[in-house]
Length: 242
Image 1 (cartoon, rainbow, N blue to C red):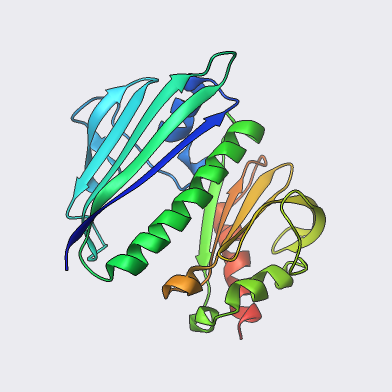
Image 2 (spheres, helix red, strand yellow; image 1 turned 90 degrees about the vertical axis):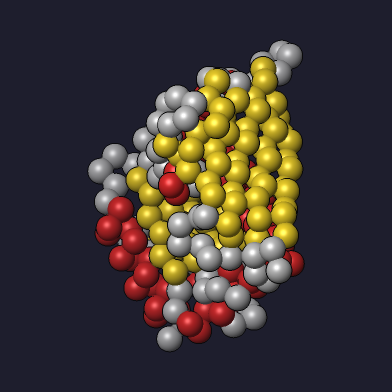
């Protein structure tokens, strides 16, 4: 049964409104995935949508009806309000709204938890990599990664003990990169985030929502090759869950 949803988040970050705007409009490969906005109200937005508010660096809204490739959703809107913070930095209000038409509770739970992880990654980008060009790569695990403990299997595969808390400096074994010094910047029952000096690695425990475990990589190193990165992680996932 169709039902509307709304996910609202507000946060502060030590980045200027202009830097936040850049991250949302042209720097999305550095924290989400590559997306493009036509820079005007009424212009094209990602996923076949329309820009309904374009007021740099204060307001950005994109709206999609009959979302392409997602039969469970007939409306999707992302609204961002950015204001300068007294003393420096920015305050951001993010509202994700729309209509889910199937499995509402699971869809909403997944979207809400993903929102927290994505916005955390946005803040990490703004704090550590703002203005740098990223190569984006992603890979999904095989069917075996739908198991209840599949995310734990992936984090152990990188060399992370189960109880490694956020903020811990670690030595991890990254596919295609070998042993690397890193920091665990996010960890809960659903997601793991690992940051190095040149990249961010995101593990998605989508097994909790009925999908395979996924990985995304935001690599800021000169000469980074998205196809090579993607292939290395896909091979790693296939081997891990074989």
